[in-house]
Amino acid sequence: MPLGWHGRVKIKSTAQQEEEKRKEKEKKLKAFVSARDAVLKKRSAGEHDEEALQLTRQLLSSNPDFATLWNYRREVLLHLETLREKDEVQKLYESELHFIEACLKVNPKSYGCWHHRTWVNTRLPQPDWTRELGLCDRCLSLDERNFHCWDYRRVVVKASGVSVEQELQFTDRLIGSNFSNYSSWHYRSTLLPQLHPQPAPDSFHSHRVCEEQLLKEYELSHNAFFTDPNDQSAWFYYRWLLGREEMISCVYVSREGERVSVAFSKPVHSEGLMLVLDGQPQQVEWRSTHPRLRHSPVWLCDLPPGSISDMSNEHNLTIHWTEKHTHRDCALYTGCAESWCRDSATNLELFRSELSVEKSSVLQAELQSCNQLLELEPQNKWCLLTIILLMRALDPLGHEKETLAHFQTLKEVDPMRSTYYSDLCSKFLIENTILKMEYAEVRVFSLSNKNLTTLCHLDQLLFVTHINLSSNQLLRLPPHFAMLQCLEVLEADDNAIENLEGLYHLPKLEEVSLRNNRILFSKKSKCFIRNCFSGVKSQCLVWPCFKDSVFFIN
Image (tube, rainbow, N blue to C red; front, side, top):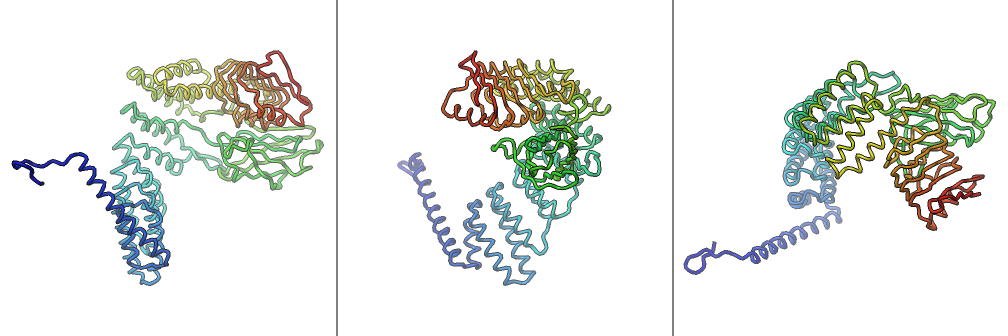
């Protein structure tokens, strides 16, 4: 270090240091740009030689996220592969793996590095999958949430033939060393249905876990959230354990318009849906109830003209869902204009898994444990939320009052998420109302005066003709409101509704009451009303700014 007057060390000012750093960065940038231009020039000239490998190595060593350079490098390697013997090719790609590993030390989450490594192993004459698993272990020990590495590990496991049981043991080790490893919990949820599937008929492949293993998983997650009640990983995993199987929940068929509607327990894509009418597969085009819904719980199709229009004929329909290896039948009897097939709301576990005596007793014990934990941690939102979910799994109607009280506490201890809790509470209240239906064929449905902030499970109301949503806190009738394909009468007075988008595609809607809302009379609204109700004989519309008036649109 240079000395100043009287032998004192000369200290550079901050401005001088910044200027030197700037000049150093500028020098590196010029060198990088020069090398980059040289590489791109070689690629344009179609040069695939050792020099290209060396130049790209120089650039990628400092910036592994330059995707174009990885692409060029693959082109060079493929060319060199044609000029060498098998042993030399092996050495060429092994050298490439060592280079990639060096790049991963610069950026362990480089998309380009992991993609290139996957490609290199497909070109290796003799890939060493044990080494690749070891690399994954080392990377995950440094960063257990490196999702690039997790994705690569799945590729390696599939290619090397590592058993599902071995991988499950791997998650045991990671979770045992750190309960906060969310990636391990998630990976575990993908492995369990493969190793311990829920027993199901031959034609149905379950994506849930058998009860014996499920009880063990309850204990594992229970230990985790008692060890660290504020860590969310185990709580989320527990919510997955309490989930239910995806299924076809309802099939509705109508002679008018010769239309078929299919409802699912969760939003799905229409790929894999097949309709069989009277034993003959039909070529139909599936569409969602609203153009914006790419994944929807309800899908519609129109049958070929004349297929089911004759009231004197009986027809049998089957909907096959090949993705889940399941199907649903529906019969349209002579003299009936419409028909539907769904399980009764009074005897089907619509919103929870079926409980055996053993599983029920375990969940009761879990609920008791969580209540004890809540006494120690009264402000713990994860504990409160899990208590609600356990109550839902055990007896949603019997625990309704306690559930509502816990939601109020959640809003107080976690006000930043009060809107989420209000929406979740609305969801559960709608579920309870559906469960309270005395008969599955009830077509008049009331959800008034429940402080609802959102609408859920409209797929369960596919054939409802009259719905009352008055005196809630709804802001809009969203696109999925179009799932109510049989709706004729809508009452939605005394809300805060501003948006009517969900009314666009309701073919049977005849009467709408919207007193005391916030709908504006814009040109778009007026145009929507006329377009929405065009072709219908008579429409009754009660608007918010004309509280005692009724409009008929012909």
